[in-house]
Image (tube, rainbow, N blue to C red; front, top):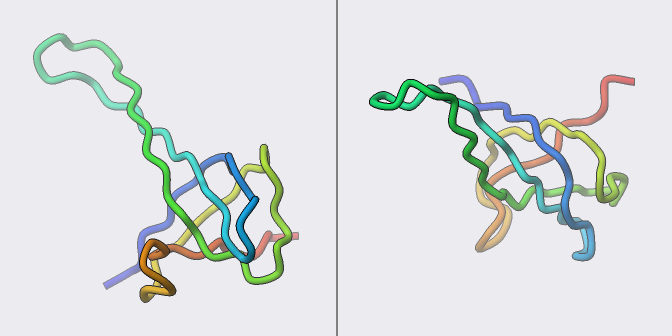
Length: 78
């Protein structure tokens, strides 16, 4: 089964080897038929501490790294 990949904005990089990523999704409300924005924060593993707040990153599912980290930041595609 392929791993999910999400794109979002880094909101915090204060913890060592960890970034908090805000992922926003848009969908059409089934009854009101208007576009709704929903967001969720994920904690992702950043081994080299390379990403800072405000960066746009892609995160991928992985095996649990800690109690709260289930995602890892993909390396930039240079």
